[in-house]
Image: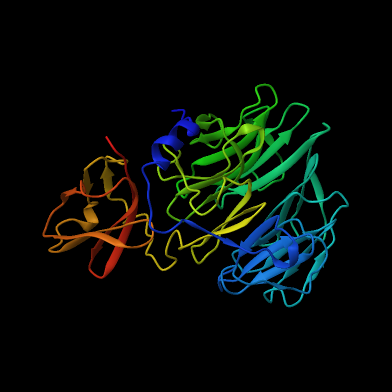
Length: 409
């Protein structure tokens, strides 16, 4: 189902009125800007800039330079808390939170995007993809586009079975989403030929999203969704020029957009796999360009480009219990008007006491009710204003949370 975001903006943005802005503006360090941000498990945020790598210990309020002071383009933190930063033409990494750095010598081609998993490193640049299986000791060129004006903008992993996707822009024609089924050894075009793919994201259930900031033939950007490893695609948003994507542990998808070419700048959010979208720009001013998005492990969302912003509150709680096998209660309709129906999975049914709680976008409790021994529950939320909410079920000392969206009739 296609969604025209410029129309949705008028409907949703005028309905949502929050006491607190979603975003707060932060200062860049020392009159520089960031081309990438990444966070570690300690809550530290690292920024790549023309003046090197900076670190913040207080969620972006203050920044300190690290010992890496050369111009840095990309930075990532892997699941072992190793920090990787790209300084042409090499990769630098730190295992002590940026106190010291080690170099990985790379082919002299430059790095536009970077993927690391244990000893496997895959990077994309202008015209090709390179892979190392021995942590940079040796490199192989695994894909050569042989077309001028072709750049690899994103590489993501679907699962632990070696399925990788790459987002490619080819300004002279070509590009799209490429797929590898063998951990990056070989690649083939999966789809979206001629789209200027800027970013990729994958949900916990394996749904693949691709963001485009244009098309070689038709010009327009948008968001595309695939539920079969990129074999088929559905356009779920158009008329936006997408620069970046981020998805949280609860599969809430965020896209950053540029206002170049007359497009709508800012950040959009979808809680239903791209079926509907909400513009979240309160606190951003006049819809600035957003070049990148990053979700920190502590739950804060960052947006950067001409300006640097952070969500005023975490978009999720890192301490939330997230158990997909047990957290699959059905909520319908969603989006909803007045009533929400909840069907509990069998493992949660026939409990003597169940608390249903609703929180608004900033964590304020707006509804709480106890239900006794109900397997199918109907909750009357007609008193709530339109907007995004979090529905929580609490029982036996545990909490299970889902995101819901109320819309006007």
